[in-house]
Image (tube, rainbow, N blue to C red; front, side, top):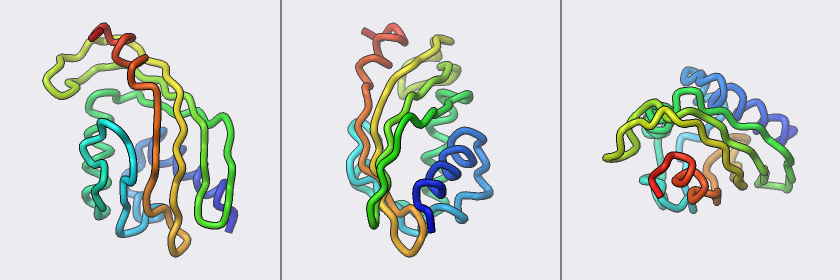
Length: 137
């Protein structure tokens, strides 16, 4: 199995095309958010339905969210990617109303694999830039 190709396909189908019906094709039944600061699911292990809830939460705020992968590094049970995230804030973010402003930020995610599926991630990205771009700071 080519994990990098699999992960790129996951990012395209799930995050960029929002094909929720394909989640089970890519995501293990136990998906752990190991590190993702300010993510309400950080430290939790999610079922498929909870993973889809997390997707909906993200897309409610940024319905046109799009990831462009810049680089990938693969090892036995992990694939690390660097990416650029773009989107338009058209929905609430917590208690903040939609700003209708566009964002562009960079980050890195290490995806964890188990039984040929993605079973978690460790992620860091530039949330401070997002906050500034939205005018919250």
